[in-house]
Amino acid sequence: MAAVTINEISPNVLAQQSLRGKVAIVTGGARGLGYEMMRALAESGADVACIDLLAETGAESIATIERECGVKGSSWGCDVTNDEDVAMVFAQIVQHHGGLNILVTAAGINQVCPAIDYTAKAFRKIFDVNVSGTFFCVQQAARIMMENNTGGSIITVASMSAHITNRPQTHAPYNATKAAVLQLTKSLACEWAPHNIRVTTISPGYFDTAMNRKILAEQGEEGVKMRQFWESQTPAGRLGKPHELKGVVAFLASDASSFVTGSEITVDGGYTAW
Image (cartoon, rainbow, N blue to C red; front, side, top):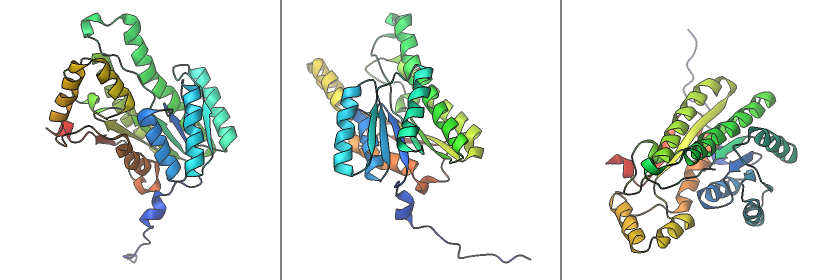
């Protein structure tokens, strides 16, 4: 009978969380939650590449991260709905940084509108950015990881809207796209696990981003009431702070989550727990 090893070597948990020597791409990383997640990866030691239509803002964000985190960064303008442009930019990033280990797909759009008034053009656009754009990026990342036989961590960004219907605002197409991203994540996790590629998703709830503050402020008193309603429906009694996503994305990107794939982490202050 083979001997049973009881005291197997257990890796140091802090060492597992380090991303030093890794290269990460973050789409939609120029500002908001995408920026906070990109910064988290840089603070953990990874070199970071920002892909965003807001190329100038992305360059400013990367300059800040390079200065404050001491890592190598780069900024790339790209429309994630154009699969040829995505392939070209990913190839350029790999050449510039020397590899790819982590991808976070934070690029996404939304439009608040009654479903009855949604135009076909607007409906297609939101699916093109949120679903097609996500797929084109994860496809390229996986292709590179497979070709280089490195494995890696791909983290999509869905939403609690994949599970609930938001209120009082209406954005049915957005909710549908996030449900699609969640299922896409699960499917790819199963398909790519043999290649040592993990695919997970983060689903944020309501966050106190600069963009949300601007949108609510533009609505005046109605915006104040909407924020109060969101807070009242959240067990934590408040909106999330953007930095509260940093620990989650750093965990999913690192070896500390090496047996985590096909999983979703919902960061919503308990909103979906009611």
